[in-house]
Length: 88
Image 1 (cartoon, one colour):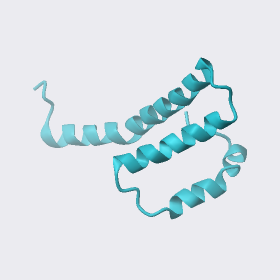
Image 2 (cartoon, one colour; image 1 turned 120 degrees about the horizontal axis):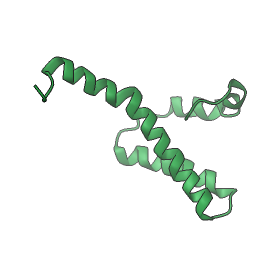
Image 3 (cartoon, rainbow, N blue to C red; image 1 turned 120 degrees about the vertical axis):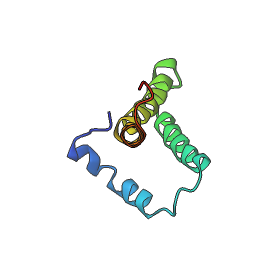
């Protein structure tokens, strides 16, 4: 998933810093716009064939899965604890 070596991370330090300096990402549309731009940047230097297009969407899907695992599932578990299991 998004776990790359420290060496590889250094290549993107300026981009990560720029993202941190952005004003608040206010809407889901804003977030989708930024993700889409990254996906287009990835594809800019690649042939538009099924395998590379699939790689691009698969990467976004994997990021979604990791975000869900780290944040959404944690929130769901907190709600389960606070409100009890629906299975009784």
